[in-house]
Image (cartoon, rainbow, N blue to C red; front, top):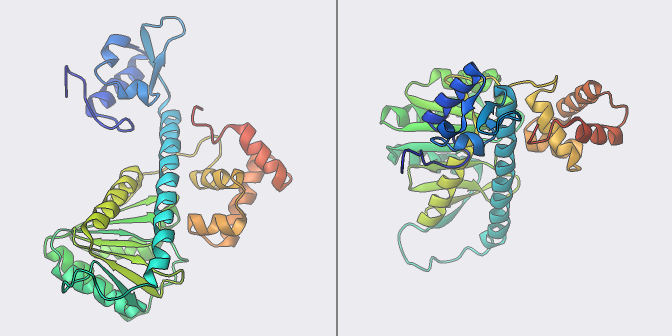
Length: 327
């Protein structure tokens, strides 16, 4: 902090900024010189100059401001997802070239794990040795319940990690926010555990402490890559932290997502993918739902906007302004 100005990332809102914004909402305006203490308010569009007096700042409605910030967050998420996919594409052909380790160490930086059972055992072993944190990205895959003994083994593994002083942070897609299978899992755990959700997440990722990470090494997830290279671990943690900062809390305390002009957050996410030209199957896969559910949401979106065809729907989405960051 320099000269009374609160320094932080542009997209963040400092405590002083939130206090000034609340005051502006109560009083209807704020002197421009007072807002200089928290430039994040103007940078993020929470305050704007009054038409009648440019030295006075007026607040934007909280629902509109939130939607604007969420839109900006979603754009960053898409960028991170694309970078992650490029990394996965670059590493996939390298997985087939595994040979003797060049370092000659006992623990290779990269190791291919064949089969889900072997991957699960490796994760269990890593968590048994861990004491700090478990970071996990869990894309929705239809919520097909695992065999009972697998589920119970995972619960015992996670609880043991928490009992040893570890903390658990998990990211899902919005489609699981009210899923009994997921919510019930966290309600049974005792300790420092938290879950959040996003419209879209990267492929599956598990990080234990700052020691080891696990990512898929094949499209069907029959192969996994165990990563112990410090630079890659740091990259994965940084990616997770960015997603976590943008995500919406789900457990232990859920935050309700706003519905604006009759368009739900899920319908808005679908609308964004529709205008990019994605098929129903692609939309369902990216948002973690089945195709039938995606089509139900598309139909509701079309009814809300008064669309009679797929081509007209894209036009109406653009004209409606529901994807406009500056709305």
